[in-house]
Image (cartoon, rainbow, N blue to C red; front, side, top):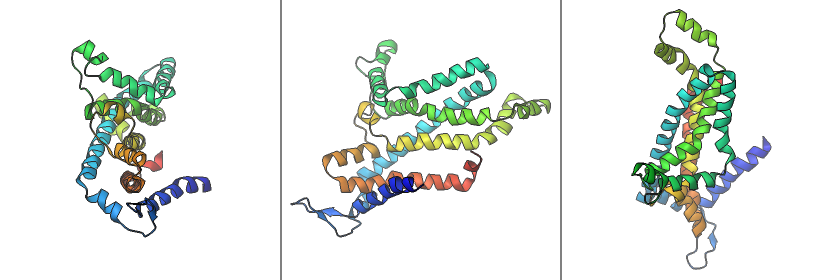
Amino acid sequence: MLWLVLAYVGSLVVLLSRSLFQKDELSERLIREPTLDNITTVLTGAVYRDAAIRTLWIALAVTIIDLLIAVPMSVFMAKVASPRMRRLMVVAVLTPLWASYVVKAYAWRAILDPVGGVLKNVTGSSPGYGITATILTLSYLWLPYMVLPVYAGLDRLPNTLLEASSDLGAKTGRTFRSVILPMLVPSLLAGSIFTFSLTLGDYIAIKFVGGTSQTMGSIIAQYFVGGNDLLAAAYALVPVAIMGFYLVLVGRSGALENL
């Protein structure tokens, strides 16, 4: 616990402290006089606001897409497939995690290339590089992080509950809505935390398939590399605050207590 506090909370404190300083324009020396100028800039600047809204939209789209894919896949894995098929499907879900993140991002770049990409050659059209390509790529990258919690939640769901629902006359759809979904809420929220937070902080995929689009992660990385680390530190507090707010809402709902 002490190590987690020092490594995680300590780094956030350092990040906040860096955002409160300015640099001398001529000497590039740090002016150790606390100011809120950097934070005010990232909160009021149109570029930063647009990038934040764009990133939130991408994170929400990725989370919804992964949820729509993960739920039926997990239901089949946990309640329909045979034990042997179930093991094979779990391995299939985990296998992409063994490959390099960069390799998978490059693979999607080759697929979505609007000139000579795989999708263009096979179907005759491609969305090209941009927000759509970013959503597709990140949905693929983070899908296992949604499937595994949902599958684990379904695997713990007793089959006797489903049988009791059927015995009481409920159809498959009613059983899914009234029995399965309410008990899956903690697992769905856990998966959404993974996909949403990973998308908020991603900046590599946007370089490969994002085209001219910018997200919070890409701007922060660009500023750090370009030497404007104080403004980058201030802007990095925005996704931290967003995820902190989301975790508070999830915690107050009580859904994670059953995980």
